[in-house]
Amino acid sequence: MRALGRWFARTGATLALVGIAVGMSVLAVAFLSAALYLALLQPLGAPLAALLTGGALLAVAAVIVLAVKYLISSPRRRATVPSEADGEVAAARLGEMLAEEAGAWTKRHPGTAMVTALVAGFLVGSSPRLRTLLLRLFR
Image 1 (spheres, helix red, strand yellow):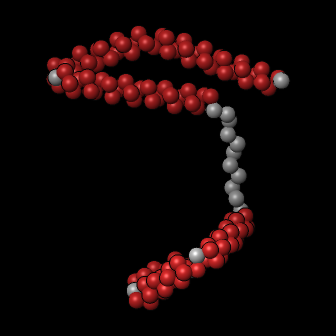
Image 2: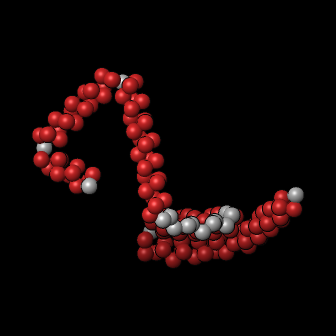
Image 3: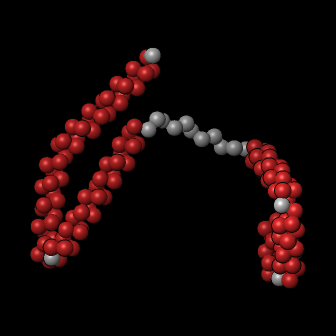
C-alpha cells in the first residue's frame, strides 16, 4: 500500500511539474517562434520561414517528450556481463530449439523440405563463392 502511495505521489508531482512547465513555456514558445519566424521572413520568405519555425517547434517538443519519458520511467537494473560459459549454454539451447523447430517443420512439409534441400544443395555445389562463404560462416 505504501508503494502505491509513493507511486501516486511521484506521478502527481511529475504531472504537476510538467503542467507548470508547459503553462509557463507556452508564452515563451509563442514569443520565440514569432521571433524566429520574423527573423526568417525577410531572407527566406513566408513559406520557408513557417516551415523552419514549425520544424524547430517539433524538435523542441520531441526533446520535452523524451525528457518526460526519462523522468517517468523506472530505474533500470545494471546489466550483468554474461560469462563465456553462459553464452555457450545459451547458444547450445538456441541450437536445440532451432533443430526441434526445423525437424517439426520438415515432418509437416516433407515435399517442400525435399525441394528446398535439393535447391540448396545445387546452389552450394555449383557456386564456389557461396561454398567458401558458408564454410567461413560455419567455422
